[in-house]
Each structure stands twice: as structure tokens, then as C-alpha cells.
Image (cartoon, rainbow, N blue to C red; front, top):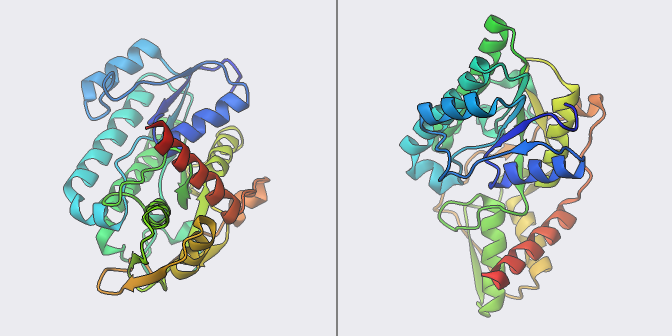
Length: 311
């Protein structure tokens, strides 16, 4: 990508898209285009086709998606599979029809089998059963991967698929009914501290282990891959380190200065026992994550509290 290349970010307001935009601006890219949902409905095939014909972007970051945590994944199964398939089909096919030079599809670590060996290598894709609560979302993402791969094979396009681990940071979703585990816990601990609550209740046993990556690190990796990686084979983006939910809760307790008790509701589902990505592939290309979990959470807490003040 040249500094004046026309770059379209689909999903520029979300956690991932906004971080990619910050990274591109930091790297002095000057011709970034985007549309809000009110101006462009990515579920509408005709609107997407017209947008690509009119704007003719050279590069595309497909970061738009319907996402959520265990509860949202389980309760919105139809919306998640339909919406994500629609978005992907519309953007990927319009990119092909309008000669986009390169597209980056943002997947998710949930594409891997529930009981995949740890850490999870890229070749484990489709090697076992998915985690049941987020199966519709994962299947949609796998379809996007295979769509990129198929267009590359049949039409000679240059579409890459990157698989980030669990992300967090500015512009995350902190709604308790639809957010992922880390932003939900950040909000719970902050509100418990502010209200002098004696307890914080957490879904599950606290035993599952998760890998987390600060979203600005992910954006740096994604832009790096857009300029240095050209293959249909998926590539993981992660920190290469994981932590149990109970250890994470203790860290949040420390950072928010919450003095009460942590209670685990084992009647609620744990989800996948462990999710750690093998990041040796991206590391071998010259990229490694730099932001520690503690530092990233500090930045996220600060952003969240500043947003509350603004609101």
C-alpha cells in the first residue's frame, strides 16, 4: 500500500476497525474512506455494490461484523450467522467485481475446534467440533475464510484472512448482555467499586484460560500483514500468552481497587476450556505483541472511565 492508496475500512467505528484506522493514520496513510451504518448498510447487496462502483477502493479491511460474548452468541444465533454471512458476501464479492488490489478479512480464534490442541496452530481449522454456544458465528467466519481462499484460487485475487485472539481496548462493547468477557468484567468491577458492592459475580467456574491482545497491537499486526503477507493460508494474531478467568478477575480487582469478594456462578457455561493461539507464524515474519495485559487493561479502564464522564 502506498501512503495515498485509497483504503476502505468496513466497520470503522467498532473495536477492530477504529484501531486499524488509528494505525493507518499513525503510519501517515492519507486516503482512508469509510461509511457509517446510516450511510451504507453492509447487509444490503445493492448498496454495497453501488458504493464500490462509486468509490473504487484499492485496499479493503473487512472489520465489520456482528459480535458478542457467550450470552449474545447463544441468544442471537440466527442474527449472527445471517448478518455475518451477508456482510462478508457483499464486501468480498464487490471487492472482486471492482478490482480491489488486496483485501484483509478479519476472522476470530473461535473458528478453531473446541478441544483443539493448545496452542492452536492454523492447520487445526476444521479438524474437530466447534464450541456449541458460538457455532453460528464461527461457521460464518469460516465461510468468509473459505470465500477469500476460493476467490484467490479461481480469480487470482489477493485476499488474506487473519485470525485475532480475544481483543480488548478503546471502543469495545461494555454492554453486560452482549459484550465479551474482558470488557464485561472491567465494567462489573468498576461499578462494584463505585457502588461499594460487597461482591462481583462472574459467569462460570473461573477455570477456563483465555489469551487477550490489546486492540492497537492487533491493528499494528494487521497493517503489517497487509503489507508483508500474501497467502490464502490463514494466519493467527495473538500475544502467545494466556491467563485463567480467575487470575484475570484478581488482576481487575487490583487495578480497579475493588475490596469485595469475587463469586463464581458455576451454573453458567464456561465455554471453551482453553483458547491460546500459536503465533509462531506471524512472529517468524517479524511481528510480536508489545503491550502487556496489565498495561493494556489500564489503558482500557482509563478510556472507559473517560467515556462515562463524557456521556
